[in-house]
Image (tube, rainbow over the protein chains, first blue to last red):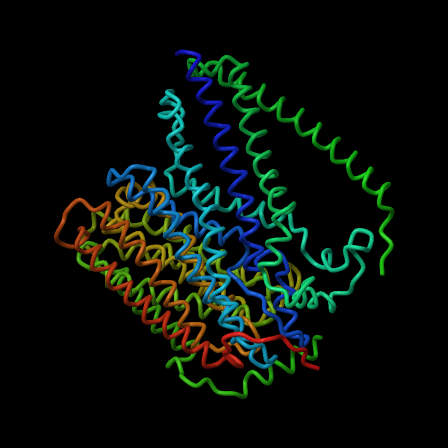
Length: 317
Length: 289
């Protein structure tokens, strides 16, 4: 087996990492557009404490199941089209478009359903808010779903693409899209929410902390100029929050795959795929993973210590 | 805050819904269960996919009603979890069901009755987990009706999953389901869209002015979407063109579920627009004291 195949494997891994970076960045921004992750409970709460707002309330469960749904739908459509012999360059975008059509349908039902559900708080249904947010949701979501389905496609055909047919993923494309969808949703939900809570409105305070929950409804109200909608939040988050989330996901995929591949190479498994070298490859991969983990933990501790020293302790209201 | 919520709940009972979804919770449960069970029992190769889709819609409607009933007691963020739990039961129950069918197959054409074994098993498991969650010495969640809710969710999930297997595979034969529904990854789609059909209705309509008819309409709408994709999968993977389980069967299912989705989606949007406080093209915000 030539060395080019190993180089191709590493190259495809890097393509997956890059796609993951893009996917998670757009996922995070999309969830900001629909207030699915950034001010989420606050959007529901604001109307209840008398703060009528112009936010889009996209309550489609958590991000992880929701993204699993869009990505699986897209994956199934792409898979069906691939079965019919359609080129992947056409099949994957069509699948992603169908996934996004579902996304928009669910977003509409969630927003108008929740608005009708809080009738007694006199929260009107602003049609411009409804229509104006659907397109940003669909476009950001399309990018995320497109990248995830592409990753699933590459992974399920990795062996064929890199010239080592033994490395094709045993799972079918929709199943991989499902798993990746849950992953991208979970990471997008937990990372990069620089707008969550009161951080933005009270960012002059140390760590942006120290406001009681009852005031949180206010962050759905006014922007620097005029009435705030979700589009302001996307503009705010696109600078650091989105790329930071993408970087998180990309780095996870990079470290995870890189250590596996390097372990396989060092263990002598890679060029020939001999099962006898498998154990050594796994052990080396795990050791490299542990080393990466220790380095990351040390780096994080140093960073947090530096930030505490630089910005002072948590003081409360 | 707690008192306010109680007051809101009391007020919720007073206004009557403008259009009624005919049966009450128990009635809808029994009707849906009976319809869905009859369709499961019939041999898969005799029934067109559209009829099975009707069974799926009823089973998921029952599930959505159960989620609503169970989650009404202040499980705000727990609504999606309950839907996922139901389909977790559903996957296990359906896999057990088709495994039972494999053993019963030599007995004759009505071997799919054995699949109900999986459903009953999940009813027992659901009931036991409900008892565990509510029991004072174990988790002590003390949610009224949780035992019944869990039992219903387990059964509805299993029945819905069995019918979806039957749509894609043509029958409940173990090997066929394994190669067409599980091997192709369609099971992931069934899982994720069925759980959406169960929990999304209540999650989307959540609020003190939530109304049962509106919530249930959403469930039917999502089931329509689910059946649409299943129809596409069936039409694309089926080998015979005509006959049950063929390409035409899939196309008919696509047309049927497309109509179901459209009708119920339009109904839901209209109902929400009518029942929300006001629908305005645009406007400024105000603070209500």
